[in-house]
Image 1 (cartoon, rainbow, N blue to C red):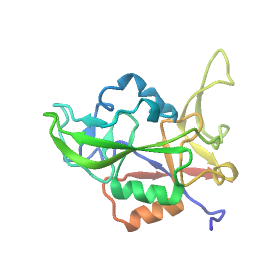
Image 2: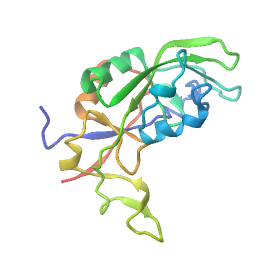
Image 3: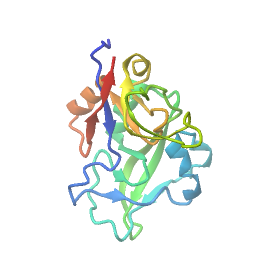
Length: 200
């Protein structure tokens, strides 16, 4: 049961970028790079997704260690099998895609078979724009271009699932307390979370 003290956390898709051993992928899923916008917007990807999807490290990627989360510069949520299972236990299969993804090194050798691209669909309008640091269109002040520092509206955020994207910052992933607690119990690796400010 959730309470008014529910906490919310921003997931860093880069993972722990300060550890040089961690892999940080620069490439999108092989063969469908023009469709990368779907992941940034929370739009369905399954219809164009390759049957044997893979993403390859580049020769310039320094680290090769794969954690429970694989860091990347493409705003993808790349989760190991155990990480994906915990997400599904909390979120289910509605309005979210779990797409299998193999990870190869820069020589095209398989280095990670049990990985998934997790794609929450849509977004939740739960950012308190008045209390956040917001960049607006000069010609149309109602148009939000970017939210630099998010402050969530508690009442609206409490209606969101345990993993969701916020409207206005759809390339971000927000996790709620119950999901975070189970991830911590599982001792997953390379998960970097930042607690968000929530306005009552």
